[in-house]
Length: 267
Image (cartoon, rainbow, N blue to C red):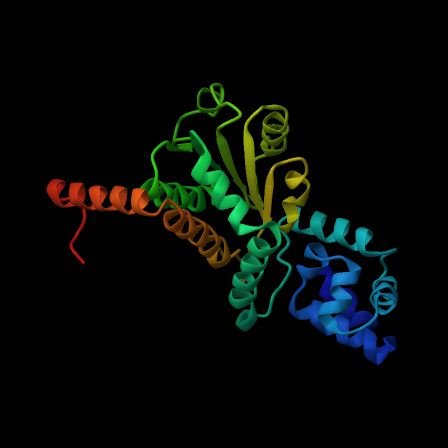
C-alpha cells in the first residue's frame, strides 16, 4: 500500500463529506497528486479549491507542492503508487491522451515532421518504448536514429546535433542516475527536445521545448506501459498523416523491401 493510501485510511473518519470525495478520487487516481494543481483537482472532483487544500493538510501535507514532492520521492524510490487493478490500464491510457491534449499534439507532430534528424533516446525500461517509437517514425520519414544502441554510448550520437534537429528523450522511473545530467546537457544544446517521462520525472521536463508526463502505475507489483506505448503510437500515426503522400510512399517502399527480402510474414 502506498503512503498516500495509508494517509487517506488514517484520516478518513475525520474528513468532511466534500473532502472524502477528493480523498476517494485520489485513492483511485493517486498520480493526480503529481499531475494536477489544487485548482484542477477541485475542478475534476466538483469541490472548491479550499476543500482540496483542507484535505491535503488533513493528510499531513502543507499544500499541493509538498504533496507532489513527497509522492514523487516515493515513486523515485520504486514504491508502487497502487492503482486498483481494474483501473490502472484505462487511467494510464486516459492520462496519456490528456497529456497530448494539454501540450498540443499538433505542435509536437510539426516539430517531428520539420526536424532534419531525430534521435530517440531510452534506457532500461524506457528502451522498448524508444525502440517502438523509432521503428514507427522510421516508417514515415528518414533520419530517425535510436540511441544508445546496445554496447554503445550516447556522445557520438549527440555531438553533431543542430538547432534543426530533435531529440526525443524517454525516461520512465528507475532511470539511470545520469539521466538528469543528460537532460541538462540537452537543455544547454541548440537542439530541440521532446521529453517523455512518468510523474516521478517531472523535473526533467523543465526548460525543454516539449514535455509529456505519462503515468505507468501497474495493476500489481510492476509498472505498466500500455499508456506509454499508446502515446508514442498516436504521435507516430499523426506524423504519418501529416506527411501525407510522402509518408505513404515511404511506407509502401519499405513494405516492398520486406517482401523482396522475405523479412516479414504477409498479413
